[in-house]
Each structure stands twice: as C-alpha cells, then as structure tokens.
Image 1: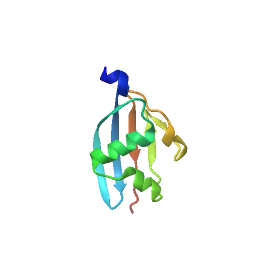
Image 2 (image 1 turned 90 degrees about the vertical axis):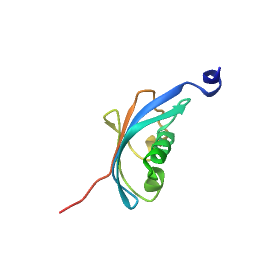
Image 3 (image 1 turned 180 degrees about the vertical axis):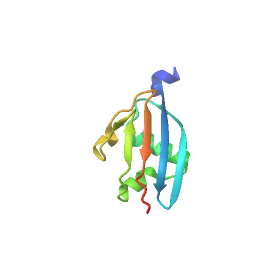
Image 4 (image 1 turned 120 degrees about the horizontal axis):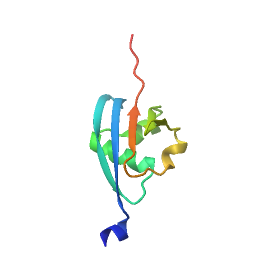
Length: 98
C-alpha cells in the first residue's frame, strides 16, 4: 500500500569525484528515492549523503561533467530529466595541476 501512495522505490548509484566547494570529495554510494526522481532530486540526495552541497556548487558556477550511465548531461537543462531505477550517475569536477 505504501508503494501505491508514494510510488515505487528508485535506487540510483552515484559517484562524486573532485573539488566541491572548499573540499575534495571522493564518494560512491546509492541513493534511494520514491516516485520518479529527476536529476536535481538525485543530486540533492547524493550531496546530503556525500556531505557536499552539489546543487550549491552548480548555483555558484561550478561546471561538473555529469554522466548518466555514460551519457554526458547538459546543465542546467537536464536537471529536470527523469532518472530511472538502476541508473548510474557520475559527477566529475575538472581538476587543474601543473
């Protein structure tokens, strides 16, 4: 009955690699959401789990490469893109060095 009310449980594998805000993050895990989440909702949940404000980083001008099961997404247009159960999202921040 709960599934009928809240929608099916969606599990998404997420990996965050790079500098987010003022710290280096290397986190991999899963987020579990109800209904049909969009990319924005998945990134909020992943950021909470990783201890990093991913959405705040985007709002501040960060330009991560975000891959959805290997396909590069365009920000901000794809923030509303629905994410399906079993998807894999990778957040990669460019890193510079010399």
